[in-house]
Image 1 (cartoon, one colour):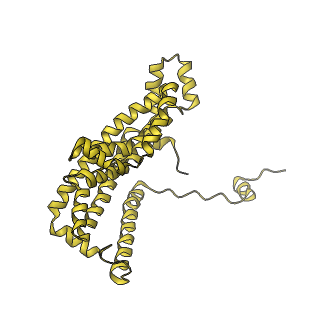
Image 2 (spheres, rainbow, N blue to C red):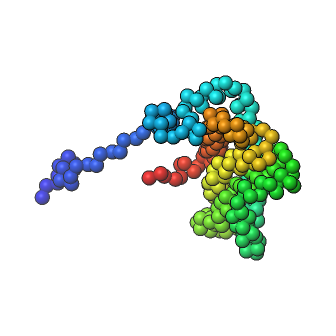
Image 3 (cartoon, rainbow, N blue to C red):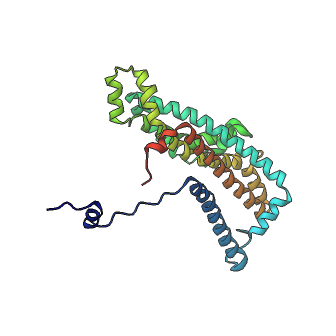
Length: 281
């Protein structure tokens, strides 16, 4: 029997599968910018349709986009000053809760006794409605940034603790076996294997906690703030100026988006190997 030529073999085996088209980096960057803008335009269109065309929502509840924009344009410096105060409180509280949360997670992961002693207590503290603690914090710490930072800390430290402890107790078996085979000390295994392997999980907790930090800052400003976007919302709502209140709410959302993606960028810079060793399918 004569051998089939390569083209004949390919024909007998059926058509070759078409290669999957690859999306270039420029196209990915373009989509990464255009898709969020498209989503924003859709949201603005729905908002305008409900408030200005169909008028199914009363302006006292949700004013039209034009009214909110006019409220911001009337006093942009005032809005930006309050936004700056809220941003500082959010970032400072987040940094404090991140440091303490990682240390607590390290302690729980390193000692089974500590884990069994304090995990129920941490769950109980996390389950307490934080807004109920506002008056107590004002009575104990007074007005200003102290109760606001405490509220941020209480609201966002638990995900960081949980992700740190989970990451450190779920080291891949092959990496742990490699460290043992090289006779690494406990500190060397932690520094070279366990902690780097836990960093992706820790960043998951940090990204969950970042929006919670913004929420905590606003709740704290509701209760005890002397400035900030939460304080501005309370002041505007008290006199029925819903356009100003909604402008402040939108600024809170924009601030949270910027802080979240700043954290995502930090993760990509700190963990460059993660994107190379994982697949999104």
